[in-house]
Length: 344
Image (cartoon, rainbow, N blue to C red; front, side, top):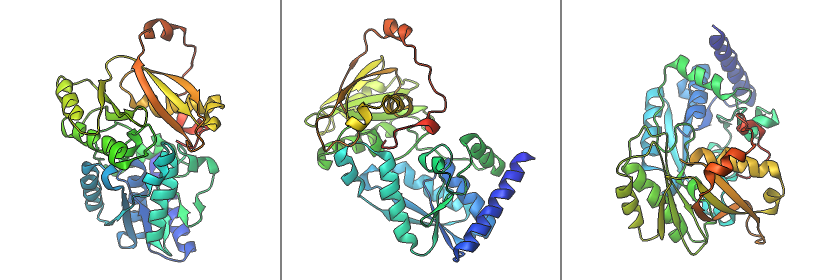
């Protein structure tokens, strides 16, 4: 069977890479998601469970409560040692605008590397992310055994192992920390940070775990937190949930995404002046996490501190039916691999 051959080759590559590195013990940057789980299963079988330690970075108030239990359960099922490492350095990144990629590179991976010391760090990075574009599997003490693989192949490997992933419940495909739903500068963690942390926790406490989309996006100017509730499928109790979120002291307005929306976005010149970057942010990063179609009205930032984007406003897209017919955008189904903007 083809997948068995791929698995055998991957395990051989892992064994040889670990041996050449000089320390038979390794650390895996583990999130509990598809990629890191597959990397963990392969590494366990390649060099033995006793030589593998999973490390999960906890982002304080921005880590979902469910995430901790999911990671614990996965480690237990795989029979692997698990260690939690806490980091709150992402607050420094969000001072300059949303940037999940920078968070992963500088907060998550640096935290794991510092913990690992002289041990090789293994990551689930693959051809669908920025690491895969480099063509490097081993760099600076970090090794990506899945570097050449696409998502479909990785999913087939997981199926081969008959390992069932648990979900946080925020997205059927791409889950992470709560901070990714703060689409604005986090100038005040007690106001902006609490808004995204508390609202998303309240939402997940009141929806089923099998939702396709379940998040609260926090947008608006620095002086106002607007909560946009995205649910797919829509739930009958959404108004009750909206009321609970609206009662949080750090939320100023609540919008339930039931109709198409227009987002007003201020962007750093390096993004605003590159059409491919704007396209990627619109259709690759934002649209997949909104429950309704979105249109973006872009404006170039004059704020030198803004490195990425800030969604300053939102309104109903009233002319959606008319305008959508005139849209001549051919959606790229391989957006993850063709992104020219690595900031977000």
